[in-house]
Image (cartoon, rainbow, N blue to C red; front, side, top):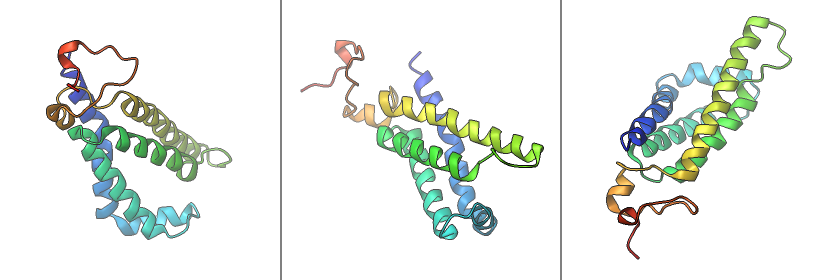
Length: 149
């Protein structure tokens, strides 16, 4: 059962790692998309968000700074859902459905990010190997796994 934590981190983080690389590989195309949403400084937004999701995705995968990075990803996901995937009010039903799917994906991923932010990376993480990952209050941790004070 302990293997579920790193598998879950891998499956969760892969979308952010690939999307972060994609932000840098296709900057010009993505700038046009951000401009169409009416956001200011689209190039800076693409480069900044690309760096954020790439670094945070890698941190979640490795299990280091997981809680902070998961919280940052949650903020990114909510902001992106409400600024880039505004399905409401679109006149084209197919486009509205596509944007609603992207919106719901971001909201679902936000739930996963919040769970990671609360519980941390779990076993088989770089943080757990160093013994610096503190358990969450109210979470039962067997004595042999509790950090020494």
